[in-house]
Image (cartoon, rainbow, N blue to C red; front, side, top):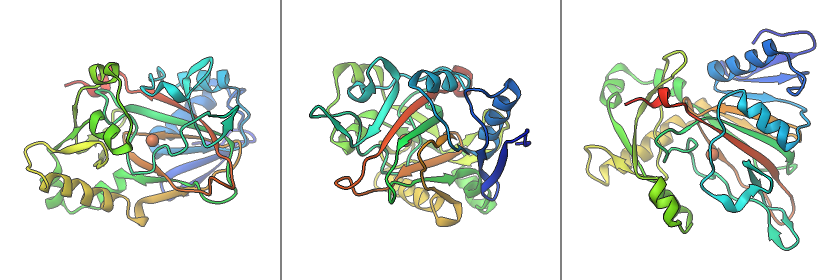
Length: 284
Ligand SMILES: [Fe+2]
């Protein structure tokens, strides 16, 4: 991203990830917003520091990337603003206001959907002073580091994703509507980026039933091994949250997961929005 007046950028981990400071996304010019979007596409993860966003402003910002996705779990959407899902251990009037344990295993968002998440946007209102980092893995770097022979073995595999399996893993009870609207789907192990065509090795373990054409446990073992590979330290950026962080990532080329924190001692409050991939990104 080219620096505009007062806007500073710095890499997070080599070519993976960009931090932007000195930019207020609610007052940014079209050109500056365009640069943020291009940075997400090119660098996988963008951290914009020191934002002050109302829920409405976060949704408006989200719409610059595409149409917000519907969240299948309605119990923790923000009242009055259903495009925002609340991640929090906070209890207000005796009720937990958000999902306290969102995303603790490596995954990409909406993997169970025919059109998974294009990008995800988290805005941090309250963060613990320790713990609760979010980890991101660079799936293009992981793919590029494989020898050509291994790439050829993996190139045409497809993963069987299942919302039912995901819900079972998390202990969530599915509604009939969720069962009806989220049938099993099959996504390629190697994802071609819809903007620039670069390849990403995008395995997933949680919420999957294996690999098409492979018996289990071999298929699930392969997925587990590949997730371990793409999340080796050399491919991972660990984000330590600051209040006011606005973090945007591209689910085409990253996996992510949350890490624990002391929920008895600290409060975390994060507002999440999802952008669903447009139909042309997942054409058959
Ligand atoms: Fe997630």
